[in-house]
Length: 312
Image 1 (cartoon, rainbow, N blue to C red):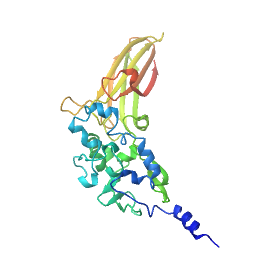
Image 2: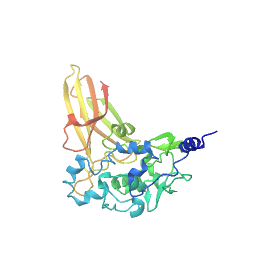
Image 3: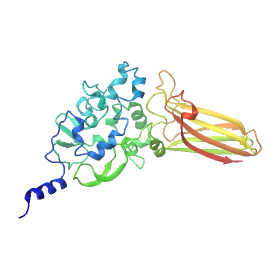
Image 4: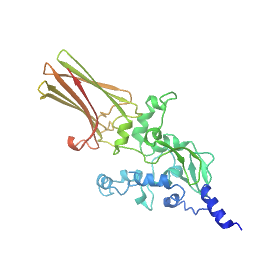
């Protein structure tokens, strides 16, 4: 005789997550059905938004009240999109988790209109729009709105197109294989985010002068963006034929809010240029860009974004 219990058990593993116990007050309930996505999220700064040493320091050990809301917020679909986040009262160690972006009372908001599960998924197009990210990333969202990337056309893209790359897989256990956004959310501390961005360097050398250009290309917001103090450094080193540095120049682009200081970040598609003396008849110009999460960070601790060499 056929063991129907075995058949049912095997068949159940092939179905989308049905018959699971889901606690919509506990983000850890999402893991059994969305293990790959959950595991990705665990590696991110969203997961460590409340517990990281960086945040503890910046918030003065949680005493700066204006810093707290975005690091352990109540679900955005409950408090409102494009509104000031509200600090939740419990389990703040979970940082920005599944419930933050997906829960709406007794349901979870889903990207696909055919989603099924015991968590009562409801379709919304807001998860792929910029509004949900704008709750906390307001500066970047405002920059994006002013750019060509926010307008219909070939450049149109939203936050997740760059910060949550797609892979082919099921979004839930036993679900349909399709294009799914990863939940790694590349950001300021990830080299991948800077690899996806494009900073075009150029140099024109003539008449004893070198003109260096830098373009913010393929990015939907200013560079740098987000937290005040993030800095790009454009370094130009002119070497003579004996490989000696005869002229070294640095230009700084620091993110400010135009309140304490004027914003120095580079808007999307903008080209900045600087002209210097070569101070040599022949040699090489080395141009590189460094990225600092803090303007006081030393060059040797900064991340090198790109470097190019030009002979003359």
